Image 1 (tube, rainbow, N blue to C red):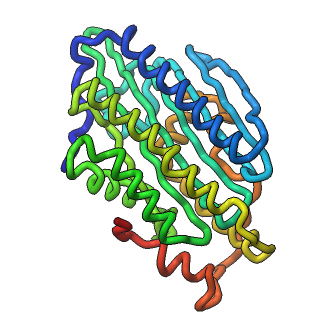
Image 2 (image 1 turned 135 degrees about the vertical axis):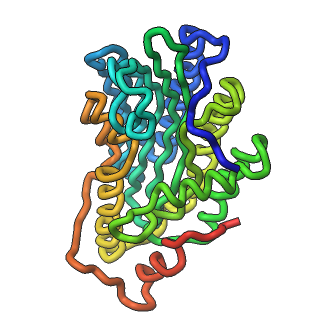
Length: 313
């Protein structure tokens, strides 16, 4: 399945009616994600409402608890006078266009090294240029970054991702899984960030209604994918060795987000709120020169059995 670069116009739907639909769903999704994390952790999110200088704003919600060392669940709806370079590099014909970007971004850094870090983002971009019909697209996905891998967790994660995709065609999961594997790859390390999931961008060839429905499936299935893993692993015994490895491996997460992540670059280039954009970074991280795991260790198993492209289902 090959997706075309976003080029469709907004059909007969006016932006004034489309944006509230997307916004309503995303605010509800933010609430549901925060609710399940508060139930697992026992502590509540801090809420931080903010405004964007060119219009719009958002609600950043951050949790620092016992089970969750740091989680950020960010809703944003921002207006901009010029589409950022992160988008125009792929779409030069949209330079000098105004835009609206609306989305929810989630990053969860658990305390227990046996619980994987996870990321989810769903977003809608509407671009307008004087004298032209608007251009729009959806994007997003979710991916998992374990420190100590469990095959059953990876299988569950990918089965849930596939379930999200299946109503939209037999080839959708395979295409978006491959895209995820390719996107969340640290070229300078020659290794994947984690065990993947699904990723999509520039989605509008299905039309607005179907594309929006797919975005909702991805958002809804993220909770189904992560909650059982978090619940199953959060009380697993660990020691300082496992904690040190977790903090070291978090460095890869930081490297990807600051070097490659489209959402991070888009947010910073559009003059977004830095605290909310960088909520994705873990509270503690370490880099060790030329670290090599001990052969045969659980740490080595991560590299050998999990940090490679493979079919989990």
